Length: 242
Image (tube, rainbow, N blue to C red; front, side, top):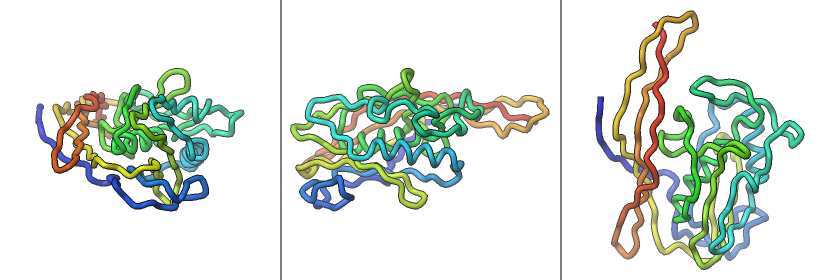
């Protein structure tokens, strides 16, 4: 079955905002360029621990003008010696315990905030199966020394990343000494979908539809808009047991 539709993701857009105080690491002269949030609802205690661990290492990171930021370099290896816990990680749609499970939600939240800021994404990897905490096509998987999220600052001024967890919300904000002059929105286009196969098995598998989606960034400045394709991503379908 193939379908085609486009819809905007409006949540998370926060541009041309006045100077805000977002914590001790942010100057009162900084302006919020964009913000994005994902929900921690349903995440395991270990996943929450690892997400908070990564947030603490990410918060306050600065990207100078023209420089490329590496999530893996900033956060560092997520190993037991570094204080992370074993938590569920999806491998081919099957959840298995692994060191650092939950870190990908932090990189995903940052990825979307970076797109809404107008930053250039140099490297991004998707999950094989779309995670539940973000709409398909908007995730950014990381695995130390295997998959990274890299972002370049194309602006004349540095930008600062602010990350925090507030209640059930994982929040990434990007600020700059100068206010935004362009508004960004994200649009997802469902290109095609594939129903899950049905199999016989002792363990019940709910199955999941496979999808191919395109993510677009729409920039609006002085009343004029244009869109650019961020990427096209395909996610596998998971079989459903009888």
